Amino acid sequence: MSDLEKVKQLRKSTGAGFKDCNAALKESNGDLDKAVEILRVKGIAKASKKMSRNATEGVVAISGNEKKMSLIEVNCETDFVAKNDDFIEFVKELSELNNSHESSLDELQKAKMKNSKTVEDNLVALIAKIGEKITIGRLKTFHDDNSQNFVYQHSVIKDNVSKLVVMVSLKTNENSDKLKLFGKQLSMHIAASNPIAMNSSEIDKALVDKEISLITEELKSLGKPEEIVKKISLGKINKFKEENSLMTQDWVMEPKKKVKDVIKSLEIDLNIKDFIRIKIGE
Image (cartoon, rainbow, N blue to C red; front, top):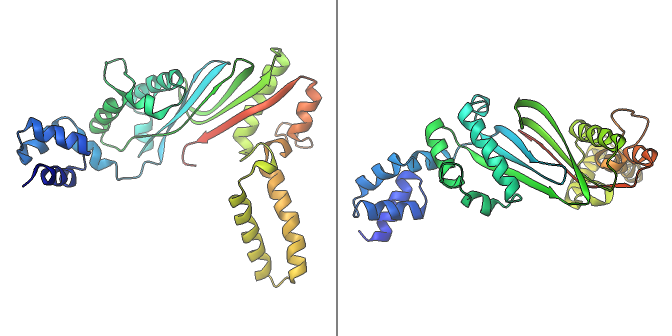
């Protein structure tokens, strides 16, 4: 059996990657059984097999300050593990590293943790120890010296780790109490209202087309004439855009006002530069 065939067989039996299998075979002098043992001892085989399972639980962690702030989602299989001390400590350290590397996943995976091992290696070891699939999910950094970042956490597990996080960047030179209150309230609004875009024109066309299709099918199934279908569809899709665009959403603290009206009433020179909302399970 050639070296390449041995690597292929080892990958098939353990689920480990090419690089790890090749290294294990070299260490075992080509002995497949010993190579399997080496991978298992290192936790690589166990970890790799678990990566085919679903990881829909987890946490979101936030790090940074008003000028540079990052969030990162780390997924696992069960809520029990999401509250595990080893898992939480790993996520907290990972969150700080993520802010340092400004949410570059490639850089983050190669970054060294406190034990001098890479994030990638520590992740494999944690999977082997805990016995569940663990993956790094969504991540984002807001970094602008001319902006201020605000954050809202919901269902907090510990410190900067929770089940839902909203991060907002406001472009402004203000630093008043009025601005800070608005930043906090806006973050809470986004958590509750879940906008999918800043303005209606920025909503993904594929999403709008799908919504139009669903609305049209529903109206046709009710036996509505073609002209009536077009008219009602237009109204419904405009309502969909309005309800899902941050600037035209009803302000949760005062539903008679739109978000854009609240901003105008502040009489502060500010723009919402960006926002992100991550909720575990969505």
